[in-house]
Amino acid sequence: MISMTAEVWRDKNIRYSPRNRQLSSTPTYTSTTRPLDAVAAGIVVVLCLSWGFNQVATKLAIHDIPPLTQAAIRSVVAALLIGGWCRVRNIALLKRDGTLWFGLAAGVLFAIEFILIYQGLLYTTATRAVLFIYLAPFFVVLGARIFLPADRFGAAQWLGLTLSFAGMLIAFGLPTPAIDPRQFIGDAMMVGAALFWAATTLIIKASPLTRVSAEKVMLYQLVVSAPIMAAVALAIGERITAMPSALALGSMAYQTVWVVSVTFVVWFALVARYSASRLSAFTFLTPLFGVAAGHLVLGEPLTPAFAAAVALVAGGLVLVNRAR
Image (cartoon, rainbow, N blue to C red; front, top):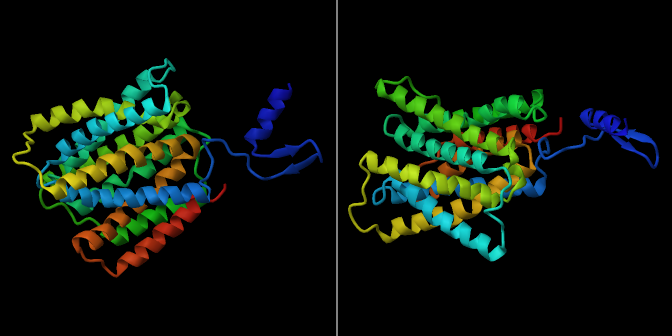
C-alpha cells in the first residue's frame, strides 16, 4: 500500500517532504523525462559543433575515399579504438545482460541510416536532404508517445520544436519542386534515414541498452554496421583508386577518432540519462554549425537570414527544454 501511494505521488510529479509534511509542485524527473541541465546542454552544443565540422570533413575526403567506404572504415577503426579503451578501463563487453538482440537491431538501423543518406544524396540536393533528414526529432517525439509514454511533449515543447524547424527552413530555404523524378527517390531515402535515426534512438532509450555502458552501445552499432556498409559499398562499385591525400587522411582521422570514437559515445551516454525527445531537438544545431564550418573552412557564403535562423533554433530549444 505504501509503495502504491509512492507511485501515485511520482506519477503526479508531486514531491512530499516527510520532515515538514509540505507538498511541493517541483517535478520529480526520471532518466526518461529529465530536461538537460546547463552542463548537459553545453556538452550537446559541443557535440553538434563537432558533427557540423564532420560534414565538412566528409566533403574534404570524398574525392579520395567514397562516402560509404568512409563510413565502413570509420566503423572498423573506431570499433578497435573503443574496444582498446574498454580493455584498458576494464569495461565489461561480453557479459550476458539481455542487450544482444537490441544491440544487433541498433547496429542494423545505424547501418541502414547511413546507406540511405549517402545513396539518397545521389538523387536529391543537399538542401532537400538536410530538411528531410532533420525530420528525425519529430519522429523521436512521436515515437516516444508509444515507446516512452512518460516523455511526452506539451504545447510549449511542440512550439519550440516547430520554431527550431522553422529556423532550418530559413537557413536552407523551402525545397523547390522536384524537377527530376529521381529526386523523389532521394527525398524518400532521406525521410527513411530520418526514421531509422529516430528508431535507433528509441530502441536504445526504451531497451536494456540504457543500463549498459555507452561504449558497449556504440560497439554494437559499429561492429554490426561495418560489414553491412562495406558490402553495400562494394556492391555499388565504390573503389579507392589511388593513395588518399594527406588532407583526406586527416579528415578521416577527425571523423574516426573524435566524432565516432568520442562524441558518439558521449551522445549515447546522454541518451541514457536525459529525455530522448529533448536531446533530439538539439540536433537542429548540427546543420547550422555545418553551414558555419563550410564558411570558415571552405569559404562557402553565409546569407543574412542565417542569423535569424540561429535565433529561431536557439529560441525553440529553450522552449523544448522547459520543464512541463
